[in-house]
Length: 117
Length: 117
Image (tube, rainbow over all chains, first blue to last red; front, top):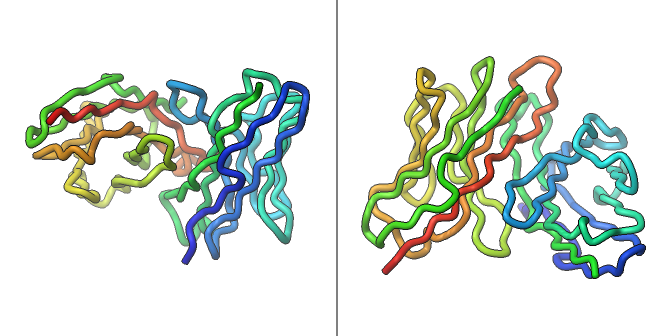
């Protein structure tokens, strides 16, 4: 059973460009979480999605950031018009439906390290 | 609101000596608590989790943690440090157990463990 997959692992963008980060959850997992890790900091929750639904986006910046988890395909975190402050590691985690995971253990991908020049 | 405080940003031990990484949490109900480890430029790996079944939790690689409700602590210990233990360690609480919450993980700031030969 493959783990959580994220791509690309490293992404370099110039200010003003768009960044698209992809996350494929573990097989059988229908819940996806995105976290951001700024340099020298812990991870901060951004958004929680289930298939075709955003459940909690309380950690998402109000502008330029969006996320989706379509019926088919990976979850996408999209950052428009990137700025230097967006440089960070972005981690995706997945978990099975709550009935099979009452304590919400989440399984993390290797992360995408975004550098904005 | 829930929160996690890791009391030491850096801990340095000699190889073969005990490790203690301290964590205090704040929660108004019985939480789910986790310790994750992150090696440089890698993703996060679950070391252990507390899910109310037992207060002393054993994890991988010889780590264990004890949940102490009276002290609101969940310190991570290992009897004998190995060079490969050098990494960043995160104490994490999940808010899933509270009705209406969505299970996002709340991370501490992290503790960098240095192991000297």
